Length: 308
Image 1 (spheres, rainbow, N blue to C red):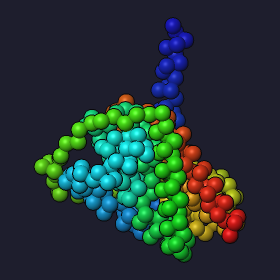
Image 2 (tube, rainbow, N blue to C red; image 1 turned 60 degrees about the vertical axis):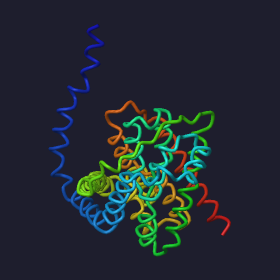
Image 3 (spheres, rainbow, N blue to C red; image 1 turned 180 degrees about the vertical axis):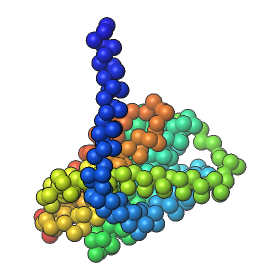
Image 4 (cartoon, rainbow, N blue to C red; image 1 turned 90 degrees about the vertical axis):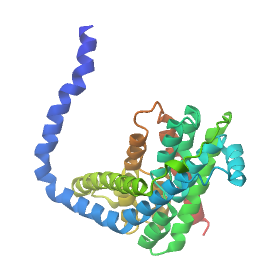
């Protein structure tokens, strides 16, 4: 009994000294952190805010006015393909048209209102958390000097997401739940405020990971090849920016960029987990299927590069 009690409290005992150690080390890495944060701020101002904020406002307006409620021409194929009832359609559309983290946000809201079962929500977030076309075409495409590359990355990402959705829906059934109209509760002022807070939420994670990446690149990631493989696991914005100018084979840059935008990175995964905080939704399927989606996109681009 005593041993069990000691093990339970060990993390709490170590947490304080560990945080104090990090606080004392910050001055030593201040310059690297500052450089990373400055790059993150630049990325937020030029790419993230323009591609996230307006879509957050638009997605909330579409859900608030219930524009998806009577779209049977979309909801029926959606249900048959993914075995998720039509209340999950807004999350899929917002996640594929408006980008991170709106897919997870919409899925969490639908589950919270009882419009999705637990199983449907856990599967839905696996293929509804994607980068926006604005980010890929106007952001990543511009960084790589070709909007066509951004279009190709977006198409590959959506294809891999659909494959993941189909695979996750095998041997599952669709639950029938009545959709309720919420347009009378819609407030444009609240929508703009929530979109602003949501955008800051996304940028905060990007800045945190930009600071971490700044330290890693200064003291650990001396190799461009190592950075090219590690950064996509951490943060999509920094990864795509680095891969656009990385001194490694171009075909590998494109394939790793495809992996980065489909996988999303730890920063995006923490955002999704935060949006689902307070629910009983498990993230185990999400992590597994997002990794599989990233690998599938990497493989598709890699093969396309080989057959050129």
